[in-house]
Length: 340
Picture 1 (cartoon, one colour):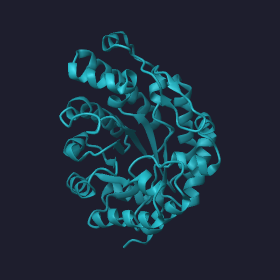
Picture 2 (tube, helix red, strand yellow):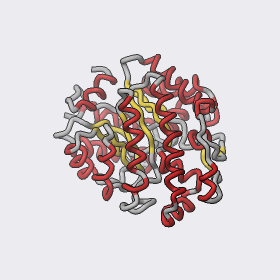
Picture 3 (tube, helix red, strand yellow):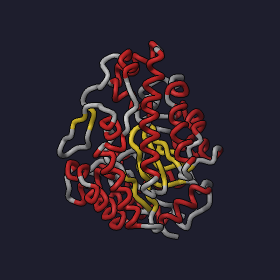
């Protein structure tokens, strides 16, 4: 099997010849290729070369094309900061008062330069690998997290406490932007759509808030991807133990979850609901700062927990830091390839 065939099999619930590896590694990949984050985010050909180099160096089964967590926010008007050596980031809110949401008008994100750079990079990588490798096109932040960027996380949480109708209007606005990105991403020919909803986990909001303010809007993204025949993966940060049974209601095809979420519970819930899992090795404490021995132990642990479940893609639980040593990545792949 080649990389694409392995991941296609996993998504169908079939056993691959070897467990696939697809890493959330754009920061590390850029550093290894020798470009700054500024150079990376500004040129689709460089983005593509970075991921092609990484996939071929480590013989990964595919690539996750990601740039930062602020592209969609910038496309709808949120002020964004662009450090030379770090991913772009939102540095102040766009909306100073929740009441101002009533003034929002739908934004056509297709004309945004950074959105187009992201899309073109996906096209180049997909064209290069064809049906040999599996290409996951990330579509930045899901509606709940995008709303938090537009308001600032602290103000957004306070908005939820008040439960003004403007909260739902803002979520609808953010959903429209997210759906646009998915439709644009589908046209690149990539194999899977994904989004991150980094603020939607219990580390930020109560488990009772998730099904009310995040889940319905995540579900719309899933439905949009499936409408175009693309499998979908959802990422949520933090410990999601208490909302796992809610998350599966999105009907996502796959989940990428933080290392803080209990792997035994993940396997149980994913297996019951026929959902593939991507993860969830600690990207900082293990892959970046740990030893090859630690990487071996953590990788084996995940593989052992999923010994009766084919729906596993080995990955970090979130983006791998740029400083992660190559020997740790090589150990992760070696253990995965040799595991019986």
